[in-house]
Amino acid sequence: MVARLLIVAGIALAGLGLIWPLFGHMPGDFQFWRGGAPFFIPLGSCFLASIYFTAALIGGFWFLWP
Image 1 (cartoon, helix red, strand yellow):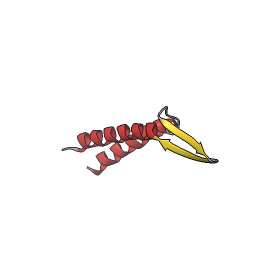
Image 2 (cartoon, one colour; image 1 turned 45 degrees about the vertical axis):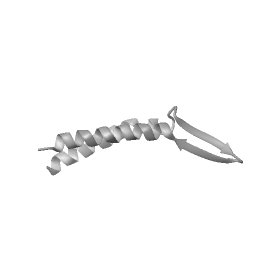
Image 3 (cartoon, one colour; image 1 turned 60 degrees about the vertical axis):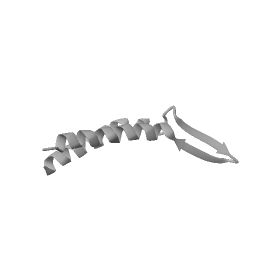
Image 4 (cartoon, helix red, strand yellow; image 1 turned 45 degrees about the horizontal axis):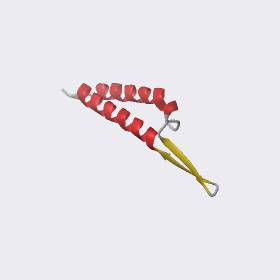
């Protein structure tokens, strides 16, 4: 059981490493400058992270279910 958990965690981290360069540069990310101060709203990155982690959790539970 622990071995399967480690395998799923390793695959999830490897997948996150492959898509990490995309975070922060998505089309839905907004950056505003007000009075010289930047405001960054990462909507696109949050959406991509939500899809990725949902898929990883569902895949992990499916793989770990006896």
